Image (tube, rainbow, N blue to C red; front, side, top):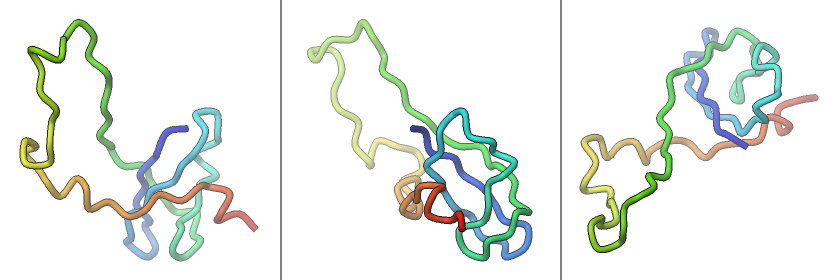
Amino acid sequence: MPLYEYHCEDCQQDFTLLQSVSANKEESRCSECGSSKVRPKMSTFSSKVTGMTSKTASPVTAKDLPNTKIFDLPKPRHVSEYQN
């Protein structure tokens, strides 16, 4: 299941939810205050690049990234943790 990032208009918090791709994103609620006034944020993703061998490609580390704060995301929670 993919991670989706949101911003709450009421409490101004950013949060991450683990949701099915078939989940109705309009029913998402803030993990901090429970508000339904949330909007999706643009998120980063990774993908596997085929055709490269281990001889030509070395593993990427946090030091190789332009923005090392990408790893400072809050721990994702499953959407079911916020439903009553």
